Image (cartoon, rainbow, N blue to C red; front, side, top):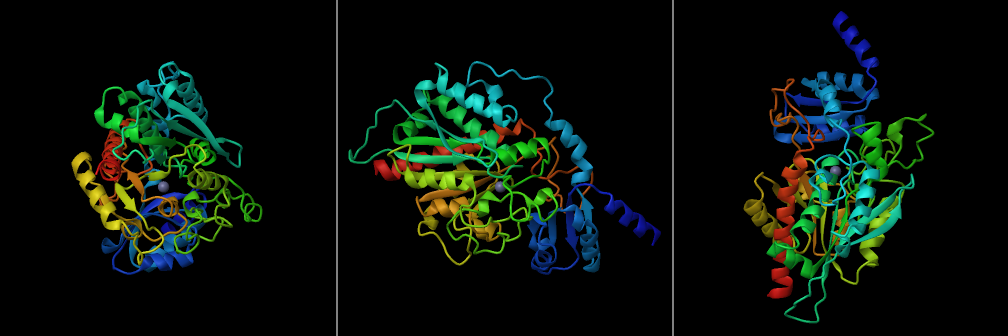
Length: 447
Ligand SMILES: [Zn+2]
């Protein structure tokens, strides 16, 4: 009893949310139960067959959730507390970085750029004699905190050589940083950008892509959330706009912001994992496209304002999980009409050019159904829309979830990322995108 009281005392004084690994002794649908009782809990990973879960738990839930687990004969380990100090230190730069004049310098992707550094780098790309011929910048909107959403377009000087001359070039859209804490996706978007620009003069496949495609990259779709994650709460996911609950909940930070990947207008609010609670990490927003970031991307893709070439492919970058996710996300009952083609194409590319094992499949099956996602919206406009969940590495530690019950001090969860991983994952993703776009060229233009 004394021990339990001490435990209660400890939990009451914990200041922040925590990540827990949870395992129940019996197989049972705990998730729907948890969803009802603890609507603000953030499910990060789960394995239904093993009854194992990783949750991000708001501080107000810690005590009751511990009781809940005990009641169902389960156990848990706190993960985040174990590693947060190591993690904090790892995010600091070892020495002051001075942005080089060469916009293609490797250091631009060897650490995580702040939003301001990113904007300066975008301008350098557009003004440097090395790259300016190939770059156009488009401000597609402003965030709630008045940051610009800047899309970098790579367009080529290469002449189009089409078999069918009436065919126009196509456009491809790549975005990162939709979820604030998924820093790796921003680094990888930048890496992809640099690779296209570096290889444009001597790589045949890249040259071919630039002949047939305009490439649009939005490295940071959620800059307000990203800056909040960098400076206030590393685990922040949403954007930073106020919600109807922001004042009511007495300034609780979790009642700010909308999950951008639940706010897109197609099938908005039709699946259970898109929360109606403004304080949830997965809050879907008050209306479809209520958020500036979402409205800006929707307009950008729908109106084709910056290119007369239609959008044909969309790569949406997230971290983490090693998944290659295809629409639909909102339903397990429906399939996109070209699903079999997408599946075959992605599986083939994953086995040809990706060293790590990515699971390919419909998002609603591989993860869980959730609605209002960007790939579901994009799939209504273009035939190739997909999400890549990247694969972070932290200090060489194994992922806690893969080590299953043997949680100890020597494991990690996916948001923790060494900056060196940007190049490792970036190389795989770049190769996959190059193969993918070449396969489209083969089918669309050359066959
Ligand atoms: Zn994400």
